[in-house]
Length: 131
Image 1 (cartoon, one colour):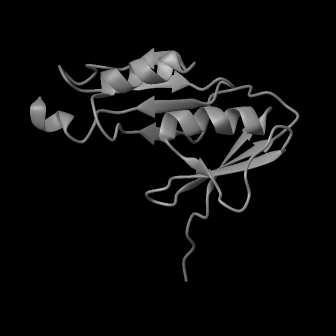
Image 2 (cartoon, rainbow, N blue to C red):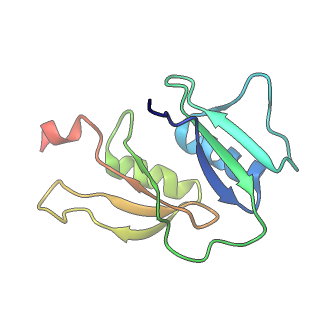
């Protein structure tokens, strides 16, 4: 017997605002039968292509230290650098720039969402073939 991941949960201070921000980043949508509204303490969003779900849950404490678990994002189209620029334009903050860490055309960028949760942007699947 094994288990499967039902969804990925993210602790936050404002579930509605953070779920709305991540919908812009990922192209996720609200669940058809459970739309997210301001004031909701739990907000679920899902990928319309894969069905993966993220659940944002309000907690009283602010984020205090580095994440022990994080999301690695890969652009569906375009380049890593284009995606970093787009996500920073949406309000992400660069935490660490690891581009070129293993030579030209390698690496990733560590960013933080508006509540300080870290995530990484990797190269697109098309990029390694171009290097």
